[in-house]
Image (cartoon, rainbow, N blue to C red):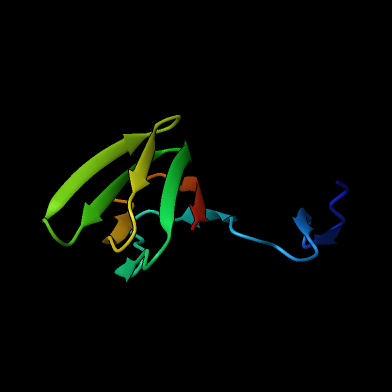
Length: 97
């Protein structure tokens, strides 16, 4: 099967994405993503550069990731990502149903 893709903003994406979504995110020193939920999707976070803190709302937990490490978040997990360092952080998230 051949899947056609489209070039958009310097990345290659399927013309009709199904199931998986991903994006590279950059957090400057002191920045944090807002609290949000994975809803019905699983999420994988892969840290490319820096040190990042993953905070879960319930149960209240914190986990520090270093470059090259990843975290798996099951569906319906309320969380946020925080850069407490003085360096820029880059990570990739991938969500899937």
